[in-house]
Length: 60
Image 1 (cartoon, rainbow, N blue to C red):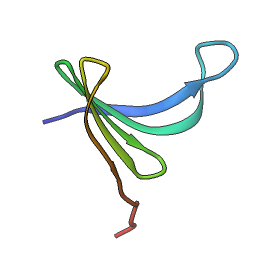
Image 2: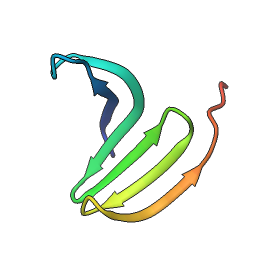
Image 3: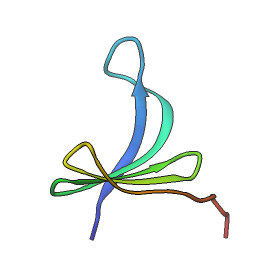
Image 4: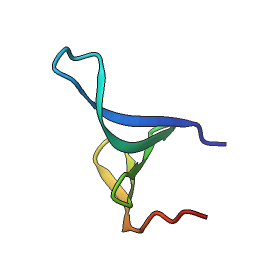
């Protein structure tokens, strides 16, 4: 099971979370980003893009 957390920019103090960017999940050397605008990115080794796909959020 993947576990992740919300993903934010940092405020001017460098510590406090500011603007919500989406969610971030990590599994070994692979990072999954689910952006607030619906973009899914799967990145391996910090620079190898495995998936970049646009979707949309739906409330069910």
